[in-house]
Each structure stands twice: as structure tokens, then as C-alpha cells.
Image 1 (cartoon, rainbow, N blue to C red):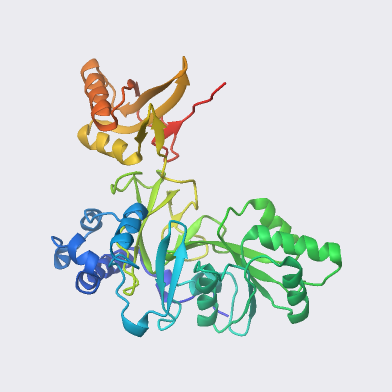
Image 2 (cartoon, rainbow, N blue to C red; image 1 turned 30 degrees about the horizontal axis):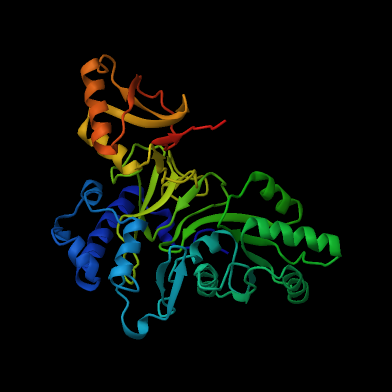
Length: 414
């Protein structure tokens, strides 16, 4: 039993970076030819001239709201899918509604096998899958990964706890797939009803937070359970390893952490929005904004995998607030920073004072840079971009919290 899924996981980081940059360039060329929407979005991009992370950072960002508009104009996938004819075997739906393509013509279409292998899944395992098979792709995502490893799958789906417990007791699967909270419910109810489901020895969970107390609960009952971070649009993004030190980024994506509302990469360790380029040529999402916050961790994992690690899910990047009847979005804060490069970092704080909304722009600037002239210019920019007035407060570099928040709504109504 090998500890690593393949040799990609232990590549020299410099080699990986070079190969990923080339893979993104090749994907751009492929998308321009095979996905109609990208023919327009990337019309001015020359993939043969792409040779650095900076080149990728100049590509346009695709946001979920834009995905919805594209799909409404050109159903079902807005011209972003390269799947044609019978190569498209499934169409899934997520809230929005957003529609996602799927294909069992490409094994492990969503690349979950890597995370499952790391969690101990092997050929011959019987895996009980409790993710939904109804419209959303979660159940099929996990099933395709398990099949790629040679596992047999029980398609439990969601709900029907008593039936699922009886099925586990009868068939004795050794692996679990689903949310951690449902696994805890199953184990607790099994104990209360004297059903033996101790055959479960390992699992992969996702879809919600995985607090340490849950991990300890499972370990006390003989289960080793790791978590993964995946989305319906992209598939696997990152996964936990036995080192239990953040989540290692999947080898099938190019990941960036950017300032919320922009496409500008942030420094290592700074919290920002997760941007992912999916290297799957069938659905080549390029610089897709997940809307999730995370941060790159320094160094490499003790498990021997050399890819970069992220801290996991740290909140949502969509911090839209309605102030005095106007919607204020992170993209507007990003525009503000572009207009005023002397501002290192900014945060709009919305408060309720004297029975009205009060807006304050907190800005990190270099020592001596925060003068009255800059304050007036910033206040004017806020009014021009957001259509509301704001007070400007200067702060020293590093004084604003490293949490990815660019709009903080602290209003409390009495």
C-alpha cells in the first residue's frame, strides 16, 4: 500500500509550477477553440506568450454571478463546456440555478480519487456514500472517485437514517463518504439502538466544517476520517493528509488566492478569495472565483506531498452590504485600491449610529502617507464608486486583521 497516489504529489515545487503554468496556457488554447464563451472572453489572449504566474493573473476572472448570466443567455452551460454529443452523460443543478456538466466517459471526472486514496480508500473497499444523488453532483463526484480506485459503492444518498443504519449493519462497508455531522448521527444512533456498524474504519468527509471534536469522536470509535474541499463546479480543490496540517492543493487545478472582488493575488499567508483554474479540458473553468476565503500556508506538508497548502475554508468572500439603499460590493473596494496604489489594504466598516448607517473606510498606508489630501481623495472615490459618503481613517501597515474581510457590517439595531 503506497502512501502517495502518484508521482505528481512529490514533484519538485519549481518543476510543478512550470508544468502548471504550461498546463494553463494549453488549457487557454484548448478553451478558445472548443468552448464558445472563452473564444470571446479570451479573444485577445495569446496562450503561446504565457510563461509566468503574472501572465495567468492577467486573465479575466469568471464569477458565479457571471456564470449564471452566461447560462441564462446560452443554456445549459453558457458556452463554457467543451463536452459535445454523447461525451456529455450528465447535467447537474446547484442553487441559482447553476448547471454543471458531467461525464462518465472520463474516469474520475471530478478528481476525488486522490483525496480518497489519501484517506485510505483502496481497491476492494465497500464505501457507503451518503452525499446526495438528487440533481446535485456531490454523490456522483464521490462515486466516480471511488470507482477509479476500484471500490464498490453503496449509494446511500441523504436522509432515511434508520434504513441507512440497517444497510451498514447488514453489508458491513469499511468506508464512509458524506458530511461529518451525518456520520456522527449514524454512530450515535447505532449505539443507541445496539446496531453494529463497527465495520466502518475510514472515511472522507466534506460539505461543512469539520471541528476537532468530531475528529476525536470518530477516532474514539475506531475511525480515521479526513476532510476534502471540493465544489460542484470545479471538483476537488484540496484535501487533508495524515499530517493534519491544512489542506494540500489537488494536482489537477491551478490555485490562486486573490483580494476579494479582484483578480489580484495576495501575499502568502494573507487571507483572500480562492480562485481556481480547472485543468479538466471537458469543463475548462479558468480563474473561477469560488467565493470562499482561505490563505496559503508556508512550507510543505510533513506527509511528503510538496504542493502548496491552504488553511481550509475561512468564510465567504461575498461581503455585499446594503448601505443607505445602495449595495456595496467587494469589487468596489478592489477598484478603490487600484485608484489609490499608496493604500496597502482597506476595509469598509458599516455601523448603525444616531439612527442611520455610518460608513468608515479604514486604510493601511505607509508612515507619513496618510495626509488630508489623500483622505479627501479617498472619500471622493468612495462617493463616486459606492454613491454614499464615508469617513476615512488611516492605520499602520499590518494593523487590519488578516481575515479577508473588506466590508465589515457591524450594525446592531436596538
